[in-house]
Amino acid sequence: MPLTREQLREQIRRREIHPVYVLYGAETYLRDLAAKTIGNTCFGEGDFRDFNDDTFSLNIPDNIRNAISAANQLPMMAQRRVVKISEVRVATSANKDTLKEDYFDAVVAYLKSPSPSSVVIFVADELNANRKVGKLLKNYAGAVEFAPLGDAELVKWAGQELKKRDAEMDDRTLRHLLALVGPDVRRLTIEIEKLSTSALPEKTIGVDLVDALVANVREIPNFDLTDNLVGRNRKKAIQILSKILDDGAEPIALIGLLSYNFRRLLIAKDMMERGADRVSVTKAAKLFGNPEPFLSAARRADMRQLERAVVRLAETDLAIKTSVGGSAPKGSRLQLEMLVCELATG
Image (cartoon, rainbow, N blue to C red; front, side):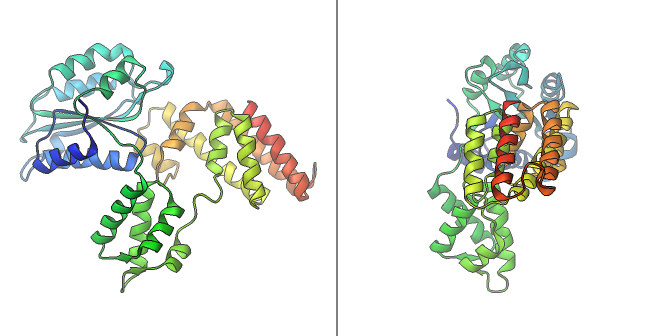
């Protein structure tokens, strides 16, 4: 039976480490933190960690075989060897998989008889349980799902992070912060660190400081618009565009945001196709908070679609600024609506 997050936490506390873990789910910050914590727990003082701590990205073809081979090697001057397998994807469509079903037998063989001196950590970006490999990994005894935290869990997490930094925040301010940040533990943690530093020397964080330093990520859901353009969901894209414009967003500013997103998607897509690992892609695309929606959009898109979008956004920007086709609010809105319909249709 798979583990809960609480069971995993208790295992780590008791230092009773399972030979194989499968970490997956939308809450990637806690997932990645768990992978790091498991790795840290495996090594003690005097162990030669550099010789026994390996990461294999499945964006590189056939790397699963290299990972299994490494896991079957004895540790060198340490009690354990840690093998992290990253960028694991078993998608709805097989052509987007990084863990191909061709390797099913090899994965099954290792899971049935894992090396007693190794700890293997599968870090999955996507696991479709309707697929054979996805079902195998999700049902494995060391599988842990990291679902988004509920409101009560977010409050508890924020309280723990504030306590670490000897900072204080009343309930009203904390609820206000969560309303601005949303259910993103990575960003919540970053914002609390920033607020705690800015509140020195008293370290009492109030609503005014939160409003001054924390942007409301829910004001303009521009990446939701980009995501639906990439997914060619014209109806949803038009709905989102209408809401953004009705809320008072400037068309030129919105085009700038969309252009920025599509340029970053181009960078990410190019790096993915060249086999770059998740960390490198995230850094190059300047991603903050939970990067998975952005990375998922990059995987779905194709290069020609992204290149065409960048060109059309530049053309629309110039047309509005030079009054070609209308630059008044009504004309600008019409041009944006036409552009969104075109990009979402593909």
